[in-house]
Image (cartoon, rainbow, N blue to C red; front, side, top):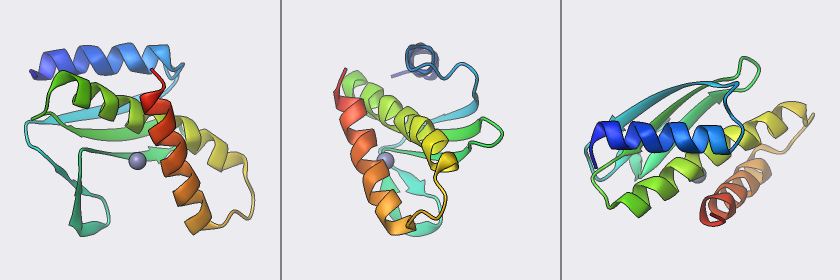
Length: 113
Ligand SMILES: [Zn+2]
């Protein structure tokens, strides 16, 4: 998939998921996996860093895959953006429980479409 095609897909899903108020910096790398932030030994199809208090996020997507895989990864990372808004409103949350729930929610939202 070309970078332009990936940009079109990401803009489509950002709009569809109601995240137009977010300033998202997208990075599309033509590789099979991208490094996971804060863990040099872990590689993933996409990763997302959010700052929900500012509605700012940074998303990196590995694009050396078929379109359906890339689109699923885009939805998955955008789901993390959605859930980060929830995290902001929860006080005294358990970090490990949050990470497990967040990942589960992101997987289900990504596959729901
Ligand atoms: Zn995830």
